[in-house]
Image 1 (cartoon, one colour):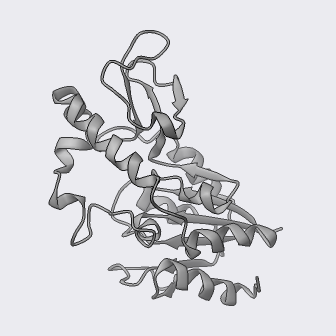
Image 2: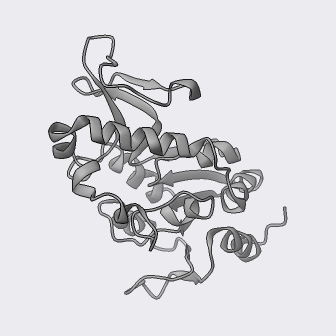
Length: 230
């Protein structure tokens, strides 16, 4: 089987109703990134940051994977599909994808604020984490999220996966957040690259096949390009 590596961003989850920071009605209108998405914010006001991520988890209870997510899961019948997502939601899991690398962490997990390897999966009835909820070594639990300014621990693994791709697909990302935006340049020289987004980005390399559609329609178009019928 050919190896199909897919890099997904906020655009694919937006179709399921998950607000992004950059949308016109997005989270930037309610929160500043500096107040909820940095380690400094956690150190300054952990209760605010904790509440922000509690709200994001509760949103997961009311959304479903869309046809973009489902279409990628269906491609596993024809390709060795590896998802690399910048999203922290669990919509790829909901859709049935089996190989998912969460580059920026996962909403449904928390970890010790001191021991980063102590990571815990939250059941749905525990989605609201309280200040005072501690890891097994007695330290506060924090969101298992890579905040702005923090290192991205899985970036090397993601780059290695892209370097092994027979086909690379990029969906719903502005390609403006680094280091994730640099991943496409790790693809092998002759690897076909498809970029799916209704808006596009400036300075997209000419060798990239641009599908100017949203995620759901774009994945259907991608299937046609790949000669797949599901």
